[in-house]
Image (spheres, rainbow, N blue to C red):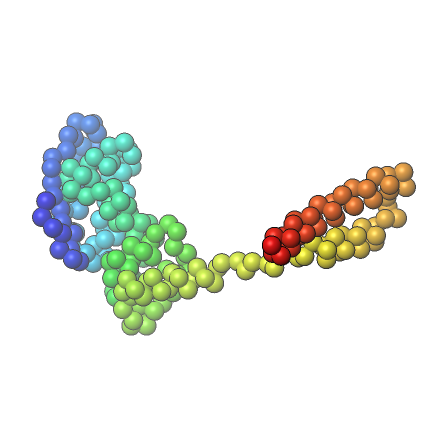
Length: 209
């Protein structure tokens, strides 16, 4: 197969056995022709192709879809998934998307299932303002959005302070306990505090060595 030019999508037909899909054969053949005639790498075309691929996948089932994509276009299933993801994420409003300067590769990144909705919205808003959303800009937007969403790690509380805090909290509620159980509870608390302190003590010994 010839090397795929940068920014273009090569379609290579190999012949698919339409007997495998039964009554859906005519519908699937029609989709193949429509996809071939509209693969021009614009956002609007990507959405159209993605929608056709989604329809075919539903008609032929997952088992035959990969074989059909390879036979009709010489694509991997991942390539087809890129189109379908864009259609699923941006297809609700294709007229809005078609007028925006979002590069196809950027659209694939923003349409990925792992991409946050906030990133897609930010890309659309920036494109509406006249900015060209390139692949590098899309990566930037995704990185910034994920960084904001990432929960901050809380600092670990030292074992001695944690044990002291537990004792204070439990002291507050000791009036509610059954006096007969106090000795057992005290023993459990001591064991718990000892267990917390042991790792720290061991760590200090290692540090000295």
